[in-house]
Length: 357
Length: 224
Image 1 (cartoon, each protein chain N blue to C red):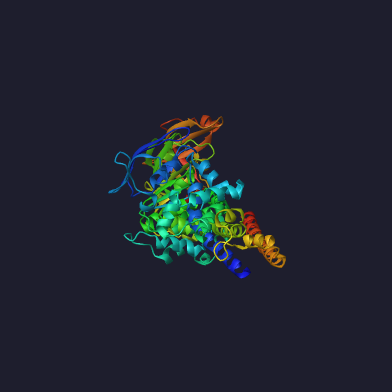
Image 2 (cartoon, one colour):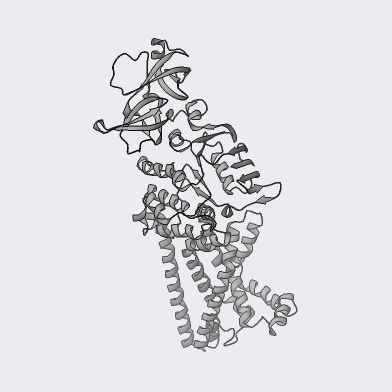
């Protein structure tokens, strides 16, 4: 459990966050740029010396300004992955990793060097100098360096922001595995819906330095108004379970709320819990399900709300059992199909239009 | 006389350089990270020898070194001899005189150092001293080399301060620049030629070395 009640004066507005986070989940901190996400993370880490208030991590008090207590950053046992890799230029890749291992806290069980290096795929880089690495390689080395320090809490500040999509694709699964494989609580800052959808379980929303929401990622992401960022495509997330493989057609069968869905074949084991990400613009709405179509995934849903998205589009929130799905449709279609709240419809989306994390 | 002077000069420059680094590195780090309003004042004091006639510095040091004053008296109590007209006095004066040549390049390098690296190091559990020794210094290696060379070369080249506080005692305070002056005064032009040419060649070599350190630094930055 991480309990915070902190204040930090800033130029445009003050950061004032009062929250407690259960650390068995991966937490995302979201909000528009300049809302204080990074300041919050830096305050947690002990990098903001002017912060006031109280921070308690399990039974350790890291800051209590009333008591005049401030535990220095290097004594908090926190791993911090910065936006930039911040590798030490005078050391090789191996030198950077050794710098971290030498200073790992002895009371924490360290992670095995080989495990970390293999997981992040950097074994072939160990003897290289830092300046010869690509952006993605640098960030992977930085993540390995942080893990080898055996942190008791991992903070990540938009770790993928400065990377091209190819590097993102290799690092994302690694990040997802950190929490599961190394059992380290994770808090990450992000402004990208996709990152949050793929990586986090719980989200803290921040705006103008204060908390404006705190809930499961699915709930917050499905609530379009909670996170208003026009540039990011809207996404829905469904919690699903792998129930079978149809190798003849290259498909994996997954189940959600008693309904079967089909996605491109993955190597996932039967019974694995997976998260499906469905962009809202990939979902179309059908009034009756009699006609045959090439679309593989058809779910019976109920229209929960219809909101104006922009001049020509409307965002429809659909209840699917206990979960929520979003569909972006044109205003013309809404009028033509006479869609109204409470109406039973079907949501269609192609197998290629979704991702399993 | 010549070898004694050469040996004395090298000894003075070496001891001074070591002391300069010991004083200059922490001072430059302090200045580079100082936000207080005292900073320009301290910087001005450090930089004074750049603009002040060496005789002015020498004059005040001579007064300070006198056993009638606190510093001079303290030294006499401690060692039994006076600072003025002694090798130790020369070392003290040289450190003050060459301080800006060491502090300024170091301060510039420390100011340009990426503080993100220090934050990264503290998140890995490195203490202040640990960060300074293992991140700051290794990443300022060129500046350290530059500062050391500057301090050494500038100490070899000093004249006015030495003359004021050290006089001209062979084997004790008669460094090369003073010996050269003495040789000219006594019309020993052969010796004067040797010393002058020697100092010229030394200075030239030192500067070439310095500028190539600096060049490498510049091209290194460009490559990033």
